[in-house]
Image 1: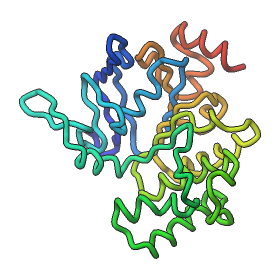
Image 2: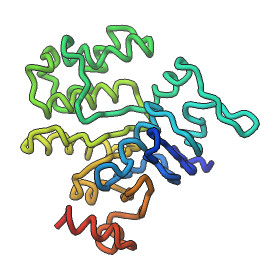
Image 3: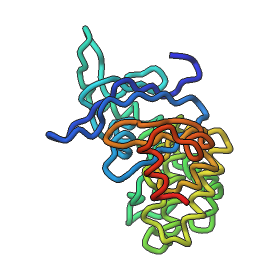
Image 4: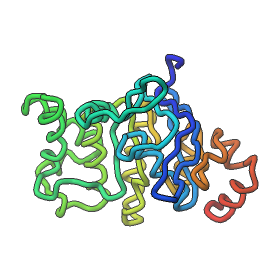
Length: 256
């Protein structure tokens, strides 16, 4: 694997009983790259993200992050599932932001962010708090450190979720439709945080319906349909001159 490749996916397959969610995905993501993944519902976008973070196991193919096979050990050509502790250690370098925030309702914004660094990474509470306050400032929420999720807007909650993921100092950030559950007027504040991360060189894979955001921020856009990557190219090429009729039809329906 070249030194600048962070994620390498070869022939990835995932079944949910008889349904083939991923039908042989091949993809390479380079360090510092922003890849946006678009496509219709049920095309395998979120499943692909969850496999990268090993929240879903895969049935075939190989998935590597920085050269490490994710979720499995390979012996004599066969895959053997790793124990949960080893999988958890792999996940530490991969941050994930979900549609529905998944914040602890009974903990403040600050406590949500410090939970992982203290209990997983073993950082002292004092240092974790200092770093969490810096992250809250970074996402524009330093004044909401002591607020509980129920007292914050959906946009603020999602920004806390991003800060929580960043607190683990990930090499890779995964975003699964991070604005889909937000009130329309709050989408912009979350996208701005993501723009800032992209500008700072964070490697990001973003499943999104925000085609304009993908056009602005992505280095490449992947269009998925039927569990496959139909097309993957620069925003300029894919959005303005798609190579396949399926991509062209999708864009005509969702982007003007």
